[in-house]
Length: 71
Image (cartoon, rainbow, N blue to C red; front, side, top):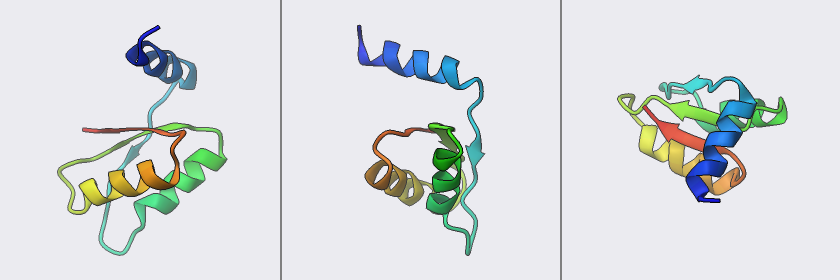
C-alpha cells in the first residue's frame, strides 16, 4: 500500500477534516491538541493566514500521528 492510500483511508474514516485558521494571539497547536484528544486525527490549516507555516510545523513536530494539510 502506498503512503497516500493510508492517508486517504484515514481521512475517509475520520468523516470530517476540521479547519484551523491561525489568528493573532491564538495557538493553533492548542486547537490541534483539542482535536487530537477528542479523537480527530486530521486537520487543515488555512494557509493564507499569517503564521500558517509555523502552525503546520508545530503540529507536525508535536503531534506526529496527526494528518495536517494546508488549504
